[in-house]
Amino acid sequence: MSIGTSPALRRLLAAGAALVVSAATLVATAAPAQAATVNGIDISHYQGTINWTSVRNSGIEFAFIKATEGTSYKDPRFNTNYVAAYNAGVIRGAYHFARPAASSGAVQANFLASNGGAWSADSRTLPAALDIENNPSGAQCYGLSTTQMRNWIADFLNTYRARTGRYAVIYTTTNFWNTCTGNYTGFAANHPMWVARWASTVGTLPAGWGVWSFWQYSATGRVSGISGDVDRNYWNGTRARLIALANNTP
Image 1 (cartoon, rainbow, N blue to C red):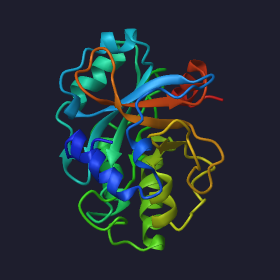
Image 2: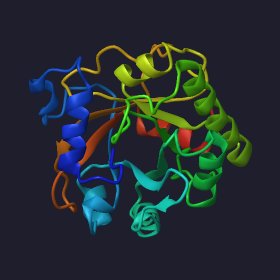
Image 3: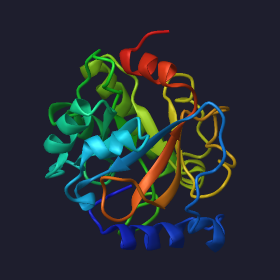
Image 4: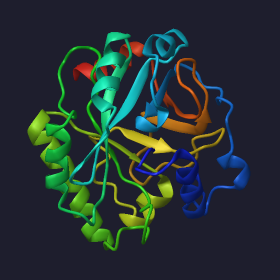
């Protein structure tokens, strides 16, 4: 994810923390072979100016777009990207980069919901995603115990649902989740899993989830309409099922 550091530095940080992933895995760029999947990306202002019509015409059908981080940061290109993606026919969702040491989960969920993370049943708006991953500038788990981390996440998720009526997507890595929540399974029943693993297979999922909904399989993808690297993702299903998630229908 784009977290307020450059994409290159972001990949170095991830490489240092993901001890269970090989160096060969981290540089995987080819799309893994998947059946009944939908292609997507996630972006922030680091991708610069995006031609969303070219992105859509290249086969990208959904995008998670960075909206907020912590308690005060708003991505400067979010408003432009969020509207332009919608107008190009891309199913879009906002994401929030969590800073659990900065405030309660409720404060950050409200910040997201008030700054682009709200939801509407328009066939093109996904529930927002909570990006909860290794601390880019300190202790892996932000100095929180596993109980404190679970409580922080619950506070965020419950507040977001109260504000929007939707269960947020959870973006994480298996290593972070199992280490920092103590293999917690309590959110898996309702919250779609967006797992990050830059490899040819999705691998072991975070504790509790038997099925992934989204998979970020590369941080070095290339897409028409975007200059430079971009994170590539799959939705685990058909476009019709993705639209059902967007509209909160069975």
